[in-house]
Amino acid sequence: MSILSLQQVNKKYNQAIDFAINDVSFEVEEGEILALVGESGSGKTTLLRLIAGLEHPDSGIISLSGQKIVEGKRSVPAHERQVGMVFQDYALFPHLTILDNIKFGLKGSNQEVERVAKDTLRLVGLKEDYTKYPHQLSGGQQQRVALARAIAPNPKILLMDEPFSNLDAMLKDQIREEIRQIIKKTGITAIFVTHDTKDALSTADRIAILHKGFLQQIDIPKVLYENPVNPYVANFFGKRNEMEAIPTEDGYHTTFGFISDSEAKKHKNKVKLLFRPEHGEVVQRDGQQLSGKIVKISYFGSHQMVKLADDEGKRVTIRTNPGRSFEGMDRAQFFLWKYDVEEAY
Ligand SMILES: Nc1ncnc2c1ncn2[C@@H]1O[C@H](COP(=O)(O)OP(=O)(O)OP(=O)(O)O)[C@@H](O)[C@H]1O
View 1 (spheres, protein in one colour):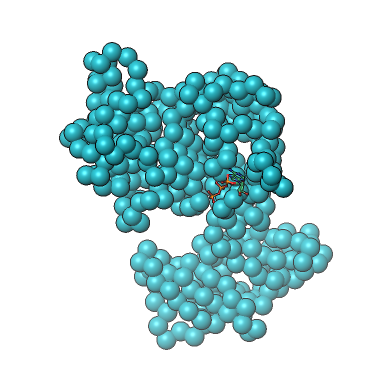
View 2 (spheres, rainbow, N blue to C red):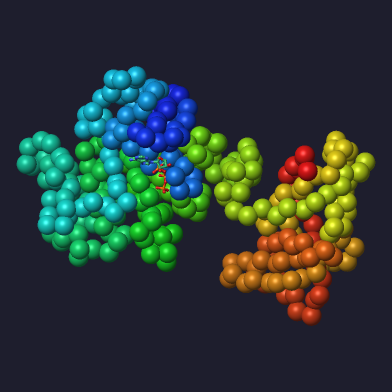
């Protein structure tokens, strides 16, 4: 069941020429984690603030749990929306203990407030730290306090602005997974903003990608990565190789060799073959249809990137396993098991 719905939402800031949000519509299912991604200025934060009630749209409808919280000029004030918010800098009260930070926004008897605050801190794995102050905690622990403070009042939806951007790269993978597990354990619906595709691909159930305030695509990570609806989405999730190709009856002639493909005859003019480094495979047998001069091999521990050039010096990069040796080799053969064909070239 959908818990949040946006219908044709538009937002233009005073004095701005362009709309920050253009006709954006989507729904979020109950219990889902949605990532909002896009380059700087694409409208991610604005969208989050519109849902939170910190900004008002020029037009459109926003519904939360079946209630219209925004429609035309009417809107439910932010503090009545039952939305939990985690800010990029965590915004913890420095002079309050961890427990008091959580208790701050809770209503009820003292006993009840104490119980809910302690339960929530236990849920995020901070039960020994009740009496500490924020500055006595690591960045990852402070983030868990911020998360606990946002979820303790049992909001309908949790909104997080760049939750992983202040974390040490070494800890990021672990903390991302911890946060995901906490959110899943509570069953709360969450939306987080990030500019890091790795955050989105690894943490979200679905990803919405914005460009100049327009929603480009919203889908599960695998579909966005493997079947992007346009070049903008495709390139946002990592570099794609481009190979010029001339279609024939039974395949494509490229400057790296011939690729058999019965679909090629559908195209009349020159095309571009687009593929990610992991959609190719370097092989050491002779007789492969594609080959290139080895220009560079970069070792990354978990994999290697092999840069190959054609006779004109045009390059493609293929990902290969870390154990493969290229010693004494001048050229390498490869094949592509997946590529997109782009016309009008
Ligand atoms: N308070 C404001 N007043 C005027 N224009 C604004 C305001 N806030 C944002 N904008 C503009 O609206 C557009 C969208 O900004 P927004 O901050 O939502 O993007 P973003 O994707 O979150 O960017 P970033 O990743 O840099 O935070 C930008 O063109 C920005 O300059």
